Length: 259
Length: 211
Image (cartoon, rainbow over the protein chains, first blue to last red):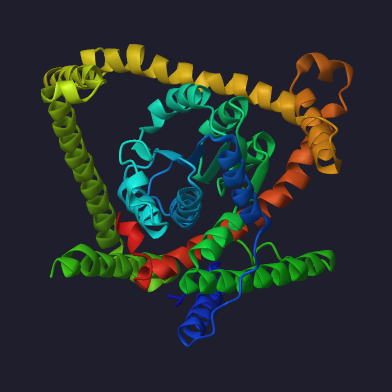
């Protein structure tokens, strides 16, 4: 019996390299050399949306998508909303802009509640946090009529949509656009990226959302993880180029990459 | 002590089982232990089901309290609706089962499912209005999106493809070449993100995953 499952050697090698890179950057961060993250243009968009809400004296809506935290493929998208939510809430609290967060995430509700409450406390306005309106749990099915109806009634001036999204993306984004909101949308859900890009004023695609969360939360562990993932991307790019060249030379490379 | 029970032990279990699952995928000499792995997976399903039970009990308590304190909440009437629906579905499920022809199945098929489908169908209208707003020659990006989108849309219209059959291969090329290339790059990025998150969870750097 072989030591490794045939056909999975390359996958394991990439996994080990990426893991080693992430661990290296984490170690560096702990040693006082955190990874420097580039400021994404979408962060300025968040500030612009908050400013618009303040100027128009209207609220801001934050929507953190659907999904379930027990699913590994959905978890990164959901986790990445936390850093963004915390930043947006703090900004809103600072400038006196009412934020409304109807969440569809039952398990994440408590975390999001605490994050928002803490953000209000950090801004020095804990009394403005409304536990019944600042954050509200709405089951996913009821979320569609709630968002379409309430956004029309409340007319928010801005909205930020991040996380893992299903087909509701287009319903929510379009409803918010009709209500007159300036929207920023981001997701790592492949089939909903076109909706996010098409229906929102500004968008974040996949990893940009992770990067934004890492940048805004100022968490050195998240930054280290991103740097390690970049190493993985360089490996994949190099392998892709090699595979193309080998394929053009007539070498049967497809079997190497089969998992 | 409570920190140990609430955080340390669950994260330790997650780390051990997570690393175990990864090892089982790559190392064939662990295959004799596959029944054990399957058992662990079954336990995770049972635990998740137990969580549903706890969640349902808490929801019933919450709505029961709202009905009891009716004057404090303007929407307490909806709680009665919830409790009645819950009891009806529960009794039907317990006494008649959930098979075809049972009351539970009937209510689900003719009440729940159409309501969901009606909500789902609204997507079509929102897609249309979003398409109308987006498909414009505003700038280069929007123009490329519009041209590609139009080709793909036209390729699924039999009336049009009958007269202009070349639309089908053009749309197929857009889907199979351009879209797939972008899609694969994106999926690889997300996969790396999942590796990063898993590692952070295994190293107990992400306590949020415990809820």
